Image (tube, rainbow, N blue to C red; front, top):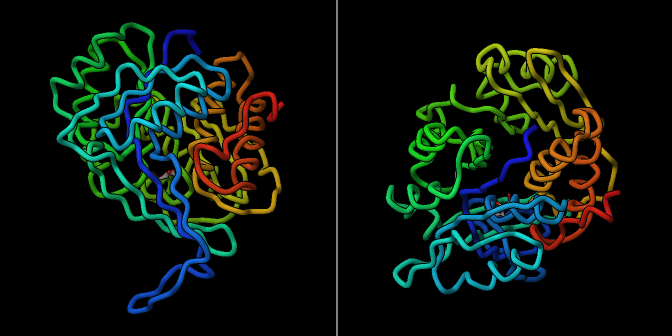
Length: 300
Ligand code: RIB
């Protein structure tokens, strides 16, 4: 990978995290075991993971004054947040998150500023970047396709984590993507194959994605089955690092940031998968999203 700059153009959320015995069912009213307000949003989380992994990274989000405290936190992790748009007439995005006794979650998003980007704002953010720089996008902001096309015009590499996966993903110019980060469900959807839970099935999905998007590398996380990296040269796999799950929120974001940082550090795909898996396991073993992510020294 090149050593040029990394831009995360993405979401910032105020996460309202409710501890629950089980995820609430239709028609049911339950009491939470506790409520915590914490920093989140897939874009902000991935920036935090890159920063904590020791990578120089820019985070450009769109938020209201109520979310400035999260920028302070990102800054403390070494993230440059100077390109974030702060507006008095938007609210920062919010996520209502239930975390059950097994650490599994369920999330409702209110996008706020995340879905209020204008083309001018994106043009202005991208004007600081050029040939060889990378843009990292997730599916929690608007104008993703526009950002991909403009980033390509500037010679940037495009990294897409199409999460949360919905019907809009297929409308994006996916053939422009250089690296996909997908989980097992997103990978199967994108490949047009059935969901699976075995090694052969995951390899089939990764291989099909390489066939469909030959210019792209594929990073496929498969929960307890570990993670895969696939290119036209082959498929690499690393097993999951076992841990006691307290809260899975932010695990995928940690994996994404640590994998990119490890490749940038010059590690090979196998070692990068292993380091990212270790980092994600540490995140899962602690409550919260951004704050639960480990520093590089802890992962090493
Ligand atoms: O990936 C985890 C994140 O998803 C949470 O922090 C929440 O804000 C949602 O965006």
